[in-house]
Amino acid sequence: MRLYNTLTRSLDPFAPQDGSTVGMYVCGPTVYDHLHIGNVRPVLVFNAFRRYLERFHGWRVVYVQNVTDVDDKLIQRAAETGESVPALARKYTDAYFALLDALGVDRPSASPRATEHIEEMIELISCMVKTGAAYVRDGDVYFRVSRDDEYGCLSGRSLEDQEAGSRVEVSDRKENALDFTLWKAAKPGEPEWPSPWGNGRPGWHTECVVMSRKHLGERLDIHAGGNDLVFPHHENEIAQARATSDKPFFRFWLHNGMLHMGEQEMHKSLGNFRYAYEILEKHAAETVWYFYLSRHYRKPLDFSEEGLEGAAAAVGRVRRLLDDVDAELRGSAAEPGTAGREFLDRLGAFRERYVQAMDDDFNTVGGLGVIQELVNEINRFRAEARDDDRCALRAAAELVRELGYPLGLFQPHVQTGRDSEAELIALLIELRAELRARKEFALGDRIRDRLAEIGIVLKDTAQGTIWKSEAP
RNA sequence: GGCGGCGUAGCCAAGCGGUAAGGCAAGGGACUGCAAAUCCCUGAUGCAGCGGUUCGAAUCCGCUCGCCGCCUCCA
Image (cartoon, rainbow, N blue to C red; front, side, top):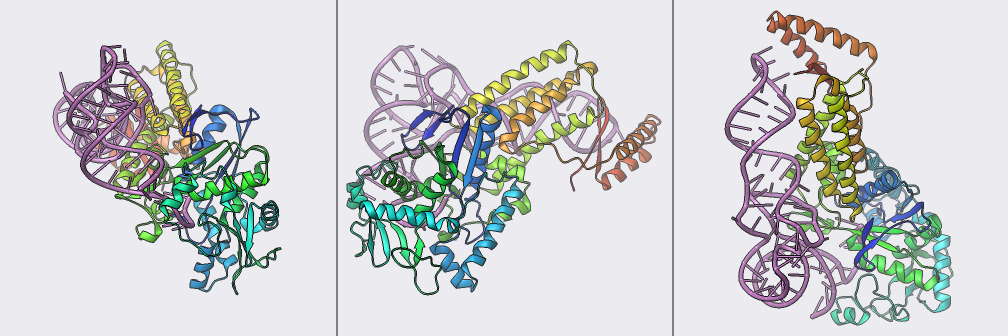
């Protein structure tokens, strides 16, 4: 497969270095508030990516996503609400994991906290101070960008370029406006840890270097995050990695596009944001996945209620097909005839085209298109297939579920009903068929209506009446 | 000022030099006692505009117009 690599600015062929395990690091949340709908994009996109690598390439994926639980924003928020920083961090860390669960997102292989790696960060910073890659000023420590010839290699901007722009505020403490903070001296009341430079806390850019190395070791395959992190965050990570080791850092840098509200990027400081949990109050998780993955991950995505409704309709059409097939084939176990086998032979091409799209820089939109075409194919077969071929629909439905899995779509509902329930419903359907044959429609409709009231929906098809239970 | 992105039918959107996927919405038809669902049919002679390269361009190059992002914490 090939992936667009921000580091090389080109589509590069990708495979894990050791041939079997992919080490992946995705920048996670700063837990000072609930995740907003923009934060959800990398969570969904890279989780889908992880699932795809595991299921369709057979690679094991070690997926690390950090939790930043000490930071200026957290301190500020705590001061506003009167809570302690750790309490605030715990509260929103819990909310973050609850959101992952609600979305049906897999838990990361590891979710390292910044506060659990203070010692290691101090070690790394000490190393940079020792070699002159960093310098100390009144209890603060800064990275010295002038010592790094390759600074700017990720974001494609030279030091000269940026100084010319000079939008960066010049601090009298820094040697260069672009020098960034590695360690920040604590003010009274702020969270603090002892260090060789006095009490303080680490800067944001150091934690990801320490935690990715610690949890991935040599498997630094992919580093991912929003494209707003390219500069300065990821640039600064690379600079620190280069300053502290000769070993190569991440080979692939993947960046998702921003979520827009109308014409603008959504941003808390603009006040045009919405919390992610609000969306789940109105829409199923599956709808949310479909919406986010129906646009290529590198492009900006316009958030809209209409978009979500369109996604819900698209998901619903596939869901109904799968539900109908499940209901129709309930209990049957036969071998398809010639026409059925021919139909199944045609299906392989859909899987191939799906993989082709997904392997091409994770083109989930193309993948979704293939699934929709597959659904159309199944529907056509379903409309004309003879009875002894219909069992082929089961394998077709399985294929839809297989292709949908990485995208968080079309997985079977948890089965809650009991066999006796199914038998009772079958009995009622039988009675209703008898009544309809006698043209006693009023009584027949009453059975259907009463069942609908308790969540059992009947549908009369050319192959007889099928039923399914509606999720409450 | 530097770096980068986007503009494809009513709406969303793929496409990466070989003759415009897919979804949503809409209309017509079939099926049906009624429901619900499904199936079939109908769509861009054209991909912001103008030039250029090519046998061939939505796709490459140049210019123009419009929109957006990063360069400061931000997914």
